[in-house]
Each structure stands twice: as structure tokens, then as C-alpha cells.
Image (cartoon, rainbow, N blue to C red):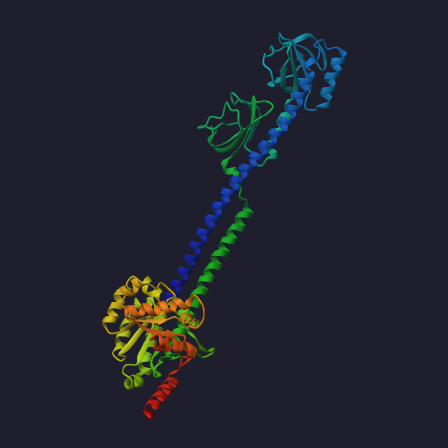
Amino acid sequence: MRGAHSLSKLFKNIFIAWLSCTFVFSIVAAFTYVHQKETAKSNLVTVASRIVSDINKEFVVVDDTLKHAIHLSPNCDPEGLHHMRRLVFENPGMSEIGIVDSKGKLVCNSFGQLTPPVNTSAPIKKPGLRYYGPIITDYLELPAFVLARTRDDGYEVNVLMPDHWLKSMLDISAHHNTDFAALVDNSTGVPVFLNGKYALPIRQKLFPTANSRAVEGLFDDEKVKFAYVAAIPSLPQMSLIIAKNDEQLVSLGWLWLVLWSVLYCASWVGLTLLLISYDKRQLSSKTQILRALANDELFNVYQPLVNAEVPSIVGVEVLIRWRHPLEGVLGPAYFVPEAERDGTILDISIAQVENAVRDLTDILVAQPDFKVSFNVNGLLLGSKRYIDALLAAKNQISSLTIELTERDVLTQAQTKTVLTELKRAGIEIAIDDFGTGYSGLQYLQSFPIDLLKIDQSFVASIGLDTLQSPVLSAVIDMAEKLDKKLIAEGVETQAQARYLKSRGVNVHQGWLYFKALELPQLQREIGKVLDNKRAA
């Protein structure tokens, strides 16, 4: 059965580790995917902006050239021809400058006078830079792109730009996984220059457009794409559109996938081993405590309650210690918190009650009213086993008290019912460290509380001008008004004892009288008191 249980725990740890790693890695993967996708979109926008900037710079140069050529004579006089050829030489992006008359006749270009003139389209009577083309030039017999301006005399001056120059600007091979890049007419969306397979979104209208914008969705080539459209500032008739397929925005190389898989598996194995180690540690701690109980290594010490008027020992607070075989005597701080986490605090507390009944039998016979007090928390109050142990001890201890903190009283939903049951059985209810928590008349009146233990921080303020001093007086006054008994903790000086007695607080606990005593020491001290009484 133990082997089956261990195997079950192993599978449980493996599953929890797998679930945790899968959850964490899924979140990280989703975040990484979104981040990479947004980064890829941003990079595509940056690429588009750079291309637009490069094209616009060249168009601005051409426009400046056209503005300088606006006064050229259409007669192709030597001076004008020399000027046109110099402009072409200075701007490698231009292959030819020409002049078209108002009737659409190309009468002169940078190669010379055209005889007869070449028929073209009549100049448009609008100001500003415009384009048309691509066209095949007569002289170079190469496709070219035309930028033109209409002069005030109705003539047009234009520049031919080689088609290959603009296409090189749109070279998508320089930009990894770009689906297409195109210079398009802003009014129609028809590509003028294109690299790649052109497509437009199905459910979103892009053209006509005058502003830059990003679009994402299904395109008419049945692929989901992210595209960015940017207008050319110097030529508002034209825009650049550049696009990537959605699955190409995030590219996971095989090396990245291998590293991710290795990290995932390593995390899974590591977390599994950590959970197994934690279980072993928990099991080890629990096993040690249960073994200590079986070997009687846990034992009680007793902090005497002293009637300061006599003085005499009228009761004890039961405390726990561990006589560890290797580390010596350990206080509760070394093992109680762990016991509360693994659940063995219940076994410890029941053993503490049973040991106290056994240890104090002779004292209880000699002093039937001898008070025995146990520290109890909310967890123990919720255990029927512990309540039954207290009720059984009450048969031997007529003056049995349980001490709770204010927090334990107020944070347990069933506390009031349990305390009422214990009160009915004759068990006294005390609040430990009174004044440091939720102190208030309402809960003191609502719960069946018999006794208040004044916290040692208030006792330490006696004779000192501190903030705690008036609180101590208020606590004593409150107890008197509510008819609650008082015990003072942490009494260490005669001055403190005298003040407390003057205020009617006669039961003290502290190093002025005794430290926590093991059973033989307690028996000797009680014997001394009895001997003194007999002698008196």
C-alpha cells in the first residue's frame, strides 16, 4: 500500500509540474508571440517609412530641378540645352529633361531639338508636381517614369526617371519575408511600380487615401496580411504600400524551438524534483514529530501562576518542549510552526493535555483548585478530537482553563458555539496577550470569556511614561466593569508587582517569581510553599 501511495504521489507531482509548466510557458509563449508580431509590424512600418523617405528625397530633388527649368526656352538654344544637360548630369536618378508645348508636342529635350516634334498629351492646367507613366522613351527605348510641372505659359517641363531606379527602391528581397511593395496611384490603388504579387484587403477600402495607415485582414489573394500604406509627401498623387503575410510576421527558427523545448522539459523535470523534495521534507518533518511523540521526546514545562498576596503557586500554564536526541531541548518556535503546517499540531496538543493530566495528578489531589491552563488556537477548536481530550481532562482538572488570542476568537466562524460548549462543561475561557489585538467591549460581551491576561508589554510600562501606561489602566478598569478576572504576564520587578496588587491584580506570572519549570522543579517549589505554610 505504501508503494502504491508513493507511486500515486509521484504521478501527482509529475502532473502538477506539467500543468504548472504548461500554464507558465503558454503565457510566456503567447506574450512572446504577440511581442514578436508587434515588433515585426513595427519593423515593416519602419521599412515603409524609410522607402518613402528615400523616394521622397529624390522627388524633391526632381521638383527643385523642374522649378529651376521653368524658364528654359522651348527653342533649345545652346545655353538652355547646356543647362538641361548639366541638370541631368548632376542627378543620376534622371535620364532626360523635356519641354512640351501647350498643344502636347515634345519640342525639346536634353538631347536636343526634336524635328519633327513628338506627339504627347497636352499639359494639364494645374499647378504642382504630377506624374504619368511608365512610358517607353524614344531615345533610350527604356521604360521610364515621368514627373512634370505646367509652366505659366502653358508649356510643360518634365523629367524622365529610369524605371529600374524606382523598382530598386522597392526591392523586397532586401526586406525578409516581405510579400510585396508597390507604388500606387492614390485615387485608384492601381500599382505604378510593383515588386511581388499585388493584393488588396477584401473588407477594407484603402483608396483613395491621403494619409498613412496600417491595415490587417484577409486580402483578395485569400491570405491574411498586415499592410502599411504611406503617402509620398512631395507627390500626393502617389502612395507606397508594403505588406507581409500574417504567418510571416513571426518566424520561429528550428534552433529557437529546440531551445524552447529543452527549457520546457528542464523546467518540468526541475519542478517535479522540487515537489518530490518538498514532499520528502514534509514527510520527514511529520515523521520526526510523530516519532518524537512515540518516543516521549515531547514533554511539558509549567509556567507557575502566583498569588502575589500570599505568595503561593495557584496554577500553571502548560508549555511544550522537545528533547531532541541530537539538538538538545528545543522550544516551540523550532517545531510548532511546522507542526501547524503539516497537521501534527493536533497530535502534539492532545498529547500535551494527556501528559499534563498524568504529570499533575499528585498536585491536583493536594490542591483540587489548582489552575491548569492550555494555549489553544482556532485550528484546535475546530477539532472534535481535541475538544474531547479537553472534556476528558476536565474530569481530572477541576479548574481547567484554555487561553486564546483575540485573533483566534474573532476569526473562527464556529468559535462562539465551541466556547459556549466548553463553558457549559466548566472550562474557563481566557484571552491571552489582552490589549494587543481587537480589544473591544462588544466581543468581550458577546463571547463567554472569563479571564483576561494582561500582555507583558503593558506590564513593562509600569513606572514609565510610555503610550502603554494609560492603556494598562484602561484594561484594568474595563475588566472590573465587565466582572472579568485578570492575570498579569511578564512581571519582572517588585515595582510592577506592587502596582498590580494596588490595582487589585493579584495573580501574576513572570520571571520575578519563576521561569518555566520542568515537573520535578515544579513539585519541589510547590513543596517548599506547602512546607512554609505548615511552618507558619
